[in-house]
Length: 320
Image (cartoon, helix red, strand yellow):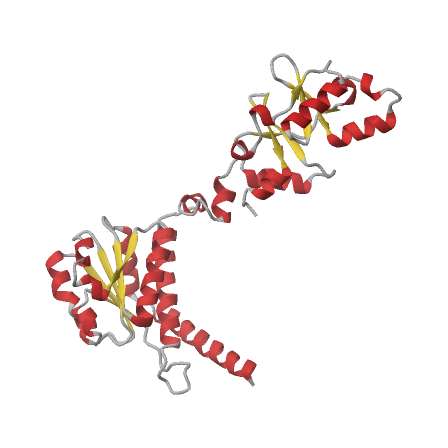
């Protein structure tokens, strides 16, 4: 029975959203144009459930390229109206359109001069008549069996807000890279911004050896660096080969006198490499799609070795 009730609610709200999509009109297009032409910021404002949606909308707008902030309706009349300028757009939220706290804001906002849009289920309400623009989220009835709890109406209000924010985002040609700049700590932001140069090991954490170095010295360099292998380089820092821990183990099993061998004899020629400016996410894909299971790749810049990229460092970086 519980599952059936859940399905009934979801179908009810889905039907309301489809109806809302069919009812979008010039007011929605006008709201998008306002936000595209914005010289200031969007101030979202509401109380109760509508206030929660207003706060969420401010976050969605801000993260998709439209500067926005949440204005608490009660705090506004106690000084927070000072955050609003004539260059702003105020996006108000009230399902009934009869909230006294919101209605009292209109005279003060008129004196400041921003454009005011109202998201409401009752365009002919007190707030609807005072707003410059009304976005209608009317629903026939709530999913609540008593038609009281704001359920379907809140869903419609939230969905319309998302539609508004994303319409502006797409009209602005806001890219994945733009989005990442506003989310540098998230996994997506790191995938789009973090480069191999930000993750690779350098300096004392990078083991570099010449081709004539004895294997014992190679082992010392790898141990000192705490890395998974050593890059074999020429006098100019150009890459000649790579010696991994696996190469060392195989040498001790294969050679009669492994300690007498040189780096040149043990190194893997033409190892897989990455460029320092490559996205870390692309480097991770190289590790994952490599025909052999490898854990390290030399990092090149202008043909010279500048670092060593370890798979375990990539996984710790937060890009997955």
